[in-house]
Image 1: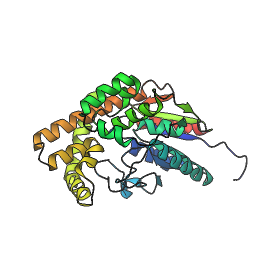
Image 2 (image 1 turned 90 degrees about the vertical axis):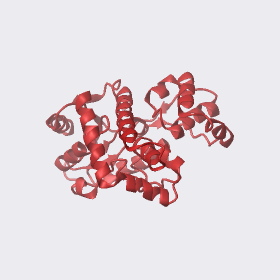
Image 3 (image 1 turned 180 degrees about the vertical axis):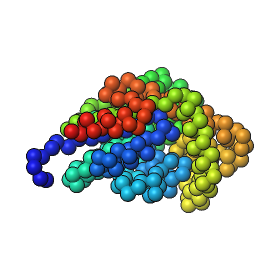
Image 4 (image 1 turned 30 degrees about the vertical axis):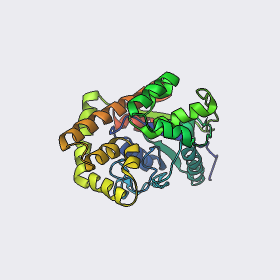
Length: 299
């Protein structure tokens, strides 16, 4: 490196689903010599493209992206796996004298990586899982609310896989785990995209129509043909859950669109419940604000 070495810095872009996080992260990366690290719990899986909103090669506009397509959808991928891979990606990006830009809506993944949450490694409990799998998602969620209200406030309440895992960890430890921290040693700028509720609803509706036109249901059908059970597809939540239910004829077209739109908006509420209390986040409504914040931060 020529001249005086500067201390590496990180940028984190967060916000509710459909708010435009990816396009903002790419714009910042192009202007400030960055590379993007995805923080999305479904985009890590190979083949989950349209339903997860995975950025395309064309949309990347030449900006390198990391932690996309790093796991088989047939296997479990945890926040610990994400944090380990994310730290490795950050080290590699910094070695290239680029700025790591972490972008996504999975708040728990971001905290696991940036704040270094030390997540307890508890082995699966087949006996407990078998018992919990007999319960409905409503029963699982009610049980988690009783045992760990904080986790219940941010978890996908319609995702049985995550609900069961949260309950499994509590059972293994005999209590709600207190997560220790080992934060990354870099100054970090947090940028959050704020969207009016009505605007976000319109964005969600337009995006869903676009994904349907592009073949989202065909993608889900193909994943099922490749060996993913309907149950496994449903466990990925939102588009995959309701798409799988529709393809099994458990929902008609009208109910599919109505219920999925509602669940996506409910999910965006949970995302904001997670992000809002974090005082490090600078909330913006225009891309120019993010450009200004980033320029001052990287000086």
